[in-house]
Image (cartoon, rainbow, N blue to C red; front, side, top):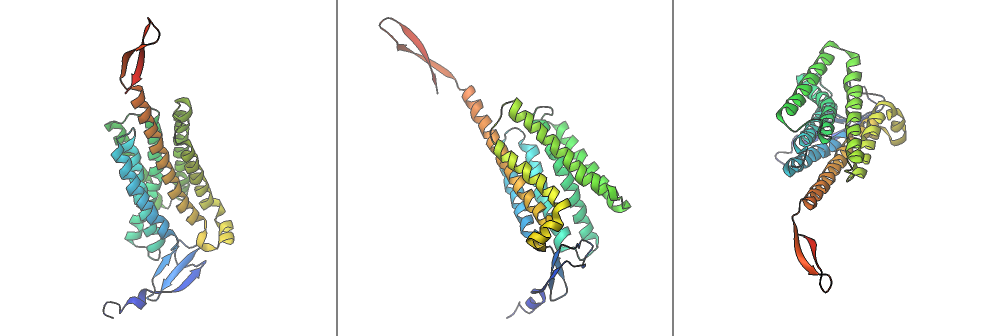
Amino acid sequence: MKGLENFGNWFPIKVIYNSNLTHHSTNCSVAIEFANGDFIFEPILIPTCILALTIGIFCGRHILSTKFKGHISYAISFFMFGTMMTCAMMADSILTQTSGSAEFIFAIIDVTLTSSIAISFAFNGLIDVDILKEEKSTYIAMLVSYSLTCAAWLYTFLAGWYMGFYYLYVVVIAVACTAYLLCETYYLFVKGHHAGLGWLVVGAAWGGVGLYTAIYWSPYLCTLFTPWFNGEFWWFIGSDISMYTIYRFWLENRQSQEVKYDVENTPTLYHPVDMSNDNIALVPIYQ
């Protein structure tokens, strides 16, 4: 059939476990080899990245449209998440057999946004507790922090600074996300804005477990679930779940604040009610 002459060149013919095909390969990995010699490394990551892009776009757009407190900074975080996971799909799965400029660019964007998203959530928390205001200077500070993070990752890659991966990936994410959780704890319990707490707890748990799993538990999970579901898979799917639950937390919490604000600012009207034979009382009516 015309147009399908090369279909056989792309049909996967071999699944390779624990390969040494690329510089990303480990003793707990999966690759699919196509008939034309191309490979896709860790194909199970692709659906998680597509899901992340969907969450980033749709949740980010919804947050931005609400006009609730923090809607711009939170929307930025979600848009960055969708972009980051798309670049991760390209760098960690589709382009891993090459070492060209395309993979390098996607890899730099991936790691830069990974660290920057954590920093972005620290800003979100500071806005939630009113330490920072939703104003131009705050957004400029966010942009500067992202730019410095990108510069640090470029130096790490180009200079071969091994510890840069530890500081920029593990330390920055841990510190920034902890700062966000501390701000949200104050926001929830000291300020009394409890709505959506369950969603936040689930999101924090998935985020923490996912990061720890990717770093320390991958060999064990590889044995338990086969190389298809190694630590990297759980890190990716955990990130998706974490971001979606944070979206639900933010939305539920802000909607509850809006309802509370509406009730507290509802005009009160009074009309006389005959309480006894000779006494007239004024009874408040909320409308």
